[in-house]
Length: 80
Image (cartoon, rainbow, N blue to C red; front, side):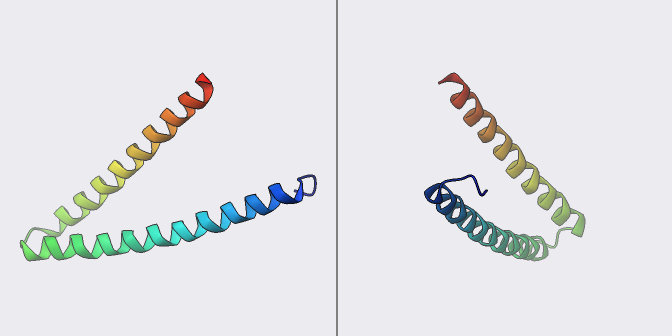
C-alpha cells in the first residue's frame, strides 16, 4: 500500500467505501425480500417449507447470476 501513488490510494479507498455502502444497501434489500417472501407464504397459507425453498432458490439464482456475469467479464478482459 505504501508503494502506491497517492491518487491510486485515494481511488482505492473511495472504491472500497462505495463497495461497503452498496453491501449494506444490498443486505437491507435482502432483509426486506425475506420479510416480503414470508408474508407471501403466510398470506397464501403455504407450508413453511415453501418459504425456505423460495429463499434458497432466490440465493441460488443470485449466485448463478453473479458467477455468469463475472465469467463473461473475465472473458471480455482476456479477449482484449
